[in-house]
Image (cartoon, rainbow, N blue to C red; front, side, top):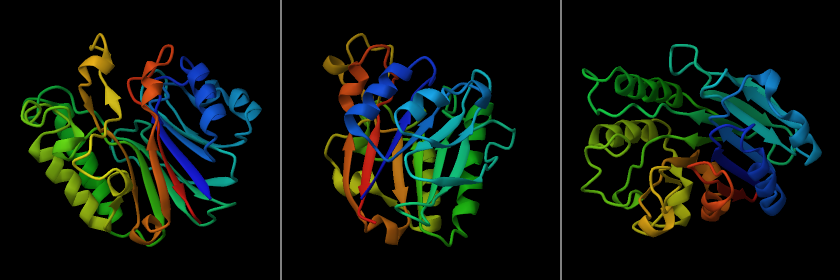
Length: 264
């Protein structure tokens, strides 16, 4: 069994206490973090090593973005794609070398896209759509069992948001984003593992805004975080879970961890 978690941590150094809590409670074999917001030199390697996560691939930058994959399983870094086309640290790919040997694990932080869902009025929205198009061209030629995880910043299904009609013109749930994401999905035949195990239209969120005074009462969530697998790899996924209570921990991220277990 190999247990893999993805979590947009929104500053790994600031939130290391809750990362430690999660690792002690859930003990995934591999943890993929997004938005680490630090350069590699300042990444808290020792804290992870003390918990047994001695293998790592960190692609960071100062103050913004950044991704890191830490693991109890030996791995090697195999790629850092510049899908943003501007040098931002938004991807790192690794190959597992121990249990799950041969699996390629891609960790990605896709741009949020700003507030206006129009590329003519909002450069960031255009950059987000272009990011997906570059990923789609990449996915079209994948020839190894691959798992791509991370903050996709799109909630594709009606049941992935607290109110479908109200959010149709809100960035992350607009029709053009959903269509663009679908093209990426079709390029490799990705299987959306979360929705294989938590079937639509069942409620499934991974993000709640900091603006909400009580996230549990309002429950205005969105499913922005995803774990997608190559078709054959997806057949080996035996469980998937969302750690919603982490949104209530001290100094939480606005995202919560999602985890898939594979029988490899």
